Length: 398
Image (cartoon, rainbow, N blue to C red; front, side, top):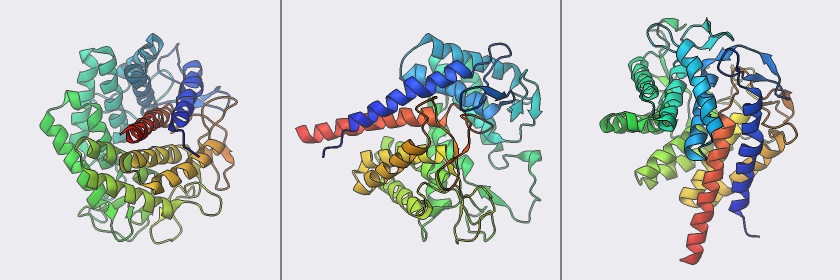
């Protein structure tokens, strides 16, 4: 039976534009106080009004991205500008660091301890600059990116809880996100800085955190890149490792680096073999590289973002290599994801399942889940499936 990649593309496009985006358009904007509500229940009703900078920024990015890449719909740009105004009015401290959370009116609740607020602000204003052409947004993106680089060696600064000098670790998250972030604002940066950041990002992800003997990426390593035998040092976050691989593939494709793409594919497959729940299906959230009990009590939950990011990586792996293992795993992960997370009745996706695959929290948005992973993932899958279909057609016709 011939696989109809166009059917997959249509499935993702329709879910994005007819279910997911309308859910956020209809339920999320706070037209009175500014910004967006992200704590939405299964029906889209607001159950908490706190505003988390990660999610405010991600939603600005999402509607700007849709405006730039799908269709220049005025309502999408209006929503992006609406969120950006709230962020510009309330989101930063006097030094330009982005807070973690605000109350509904925009007063700070949690200090700017988390550098990922800055990362997503860079993405948001970089994409909005492309959508609007307004220099002020480009300036904010550039200033924030410079701030990230200045904080990169000590991201939490004065807010770090770690005692200095005893067990100093470096974390995977920032090098991983920089691989994607720098491409978002490449037009705003010197070419040399972009290339230097990409080189460093690929090296750090694929050489420092990657453990060749196990075929896995660790979440934390010593400052010299060595393994540390403790809870944090043994931690594997399968979703992070696999998500990073499609960032790496995108970068390697631009450089025509097929060797790095193949390495990313192999790493993806080994991570899936390690983290797939062979009893109940789905990808486990956290694991210990030595098989010890993980510190995280939520280790066996199944999360939306892990699965949609894995689908993207497998689809891109198949597109770039034709490796049948990628396609077999893709179909397996797609089947699990589509049957467990997608809410065809009320729109959007559930985010949190228990190990057996039942909905654990009946929410569509909260402190961590917002308008980002699902729409970005559906867009990436839609376009990747179209690219696979086009490649297959060209092969047949050649």
